[in-house]
Amino acid sequence: MNRLAILGASGHGKVIADIAECCGWQVIDFFDDAWPDVACIGSWNVVGVTNTLISKLHEYTGVVVAIGNNKIRNRKMFQLKELKAPLVSLVHPSATVSRYTVIGSGSVLMAGVVVNAGTTIGDGAILNTCCSVDHDCILGDGVHVSPGAHLAGNVCLGDASWVGIGASVRQGITLGANVTVGAGATVVSDFPDDVIVTGVPARIKS
Image (cartoon, rainbow, N blue to C red; front, side, top):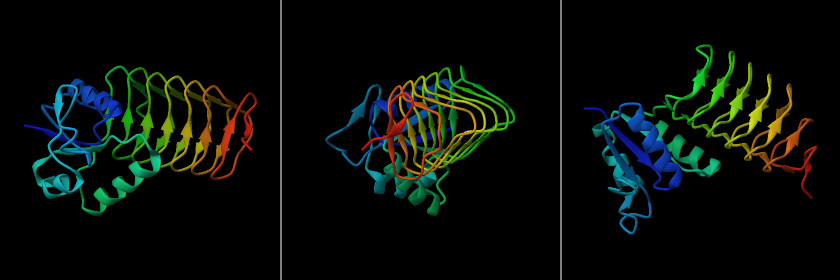
């Protein structure tokens, strides 16, 4: 029997559990540091905190970190990698992903996602509902491409960067690490690390 542990009991975790069921996972347990105050999430039980999961890693076939905050997700991913946890990626059956795409461990591709040929996705990434990533993009570890966002071809997105809902990034653009692209923004120029960009065209928020 395949058993999946999900770290992070939130709405995001609920969506990941639903994807996991669609992918055939038979047993799904949640872990969250708010336990026991949070004892269930939707139809699934929360059975312990992070340290509980660490003590029970041998009981699970797969582990996914379901924490929306990119920096926290990356930190938890690093901790679990060090412990050789069986981190797995989940791809919703309705996602369209080129067989020439490389997907890192612990990443999640949600319903309606499209990823085209030659793209590389790092570890712990979130490609959210109905976003698209075109050919030859490079997405770093712990990135989040929000629902309805679109990356054109040859876009580079640095570690822990976040592209907001409905945003668009022109072809050939490079965004550094820890960049936040605001909802609905249109990115037509490169930006360095650690900035927030908003608007059409996107500019650094002062």
